[in-house]
Length: 484
Image 1 (cartoon, helix red, strand yellow):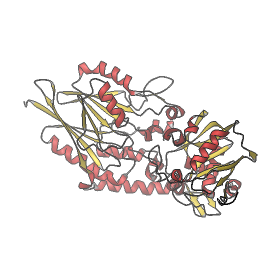
Image 2 (cartoon, helix red, strand yellow; image 1 turned 60 degrees about the vertical axis):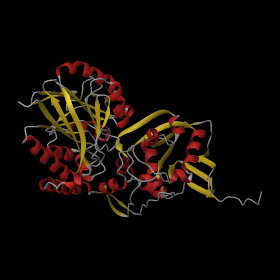
Image 3 (cartoon, rainbow, N blue to C red; image 1 turned 90 degrees about the vertical axis):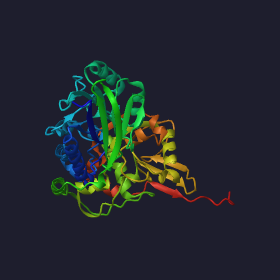
Image 4 (cartoon, rainbow, N blue to C red; image 1 turned 120 degrees about the horizontal axis):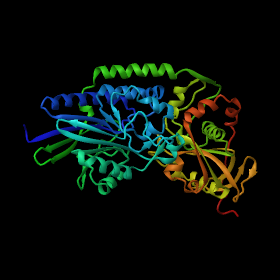
């Protein structure tokens, strides 16, 4: 018997329904598994979450089940969930997502609130024996508390749970592996503060770590995003000394692999099925609804009005950069709304003072804010865009640094001391672009419906559509400086 045992771990993360890379990933996983197992070495294949993203028509129509079948066909053995599985799917859909999975889901920090047990479709950890090696495989996902709570789940901080799991398992296993959809910064903290983690296979923050990073006795890896890479960890176990003698990480570039033809055919058939399902007409639009990221548009005003109605607020407010494609007059389908608003973003409501509202609006109309590039927090567009509003009439100056001159709220002058209920988007409560919103009270998240699902309901209201063509913003030309 050889003095060493070799384990290869192939890992993917944050594919976000980029189906074009999946046939190549399938080839990569299958080819290397065959190569290494033919040499008597061992292989583990895992996914670290956000495989699914509802911005793609196949994931939207199937609520992620197309992704699960692709993971089945790719030979994935273990996975954890990302926030795109956990908080963009309604609870009943997430409970159904993995019914046909031929791999094991590990979610150590997600619980049913009534029983405090992990979901029925998952386990808190797994023990895998490969050769004579015993592996403990743990899984954690990022704890977006309010969102999970609104979806009917309980989510906990990972570190205390990890310490408890490792204390219970470490003496009976050889290697501890964490599937972490927590982000690079948290992975670094865990590597430094939680003893007993040999390998952290990371995700969520879309980092590309070509050879991983060593922190103490822990190797941290992450394979970028969208399936551009498959991560590979080679771990050599010294049988005599009962310890890891070598561990190395690398990335395989997926474009270097041939596409698996059967996988490509399956993905194309799923696209046809999804299009047939989602291109059913919702309503006939009598007027074009154009986007315009740097100016007020009826489409933007309609989004704000829809959020206001959905949340029961006095005021509606959302950024125009959310709208990615026009809605032309004629037959409108849900697929059209998906293409126009692919973001996993939901409505929310917050109570703020009139003074705080004024500060938010004045900040929002500054050119550097309108043109600010945005990434993350579910946003799938490019820039922030003009602030779309409903329930307001705002007069502002046309300066290089615009200023709010006057605000009316539902026909009445704004009272700086009064509290107003504002319906807006949850992204603003996470990305901290408008600090005064975060100072508000009674924050309510309206889940699980995403903005496009809200719009699919409100767009049938002809009166709302007509009202959207009434201007909310009034630009006042600046007075020449030589006049008083």
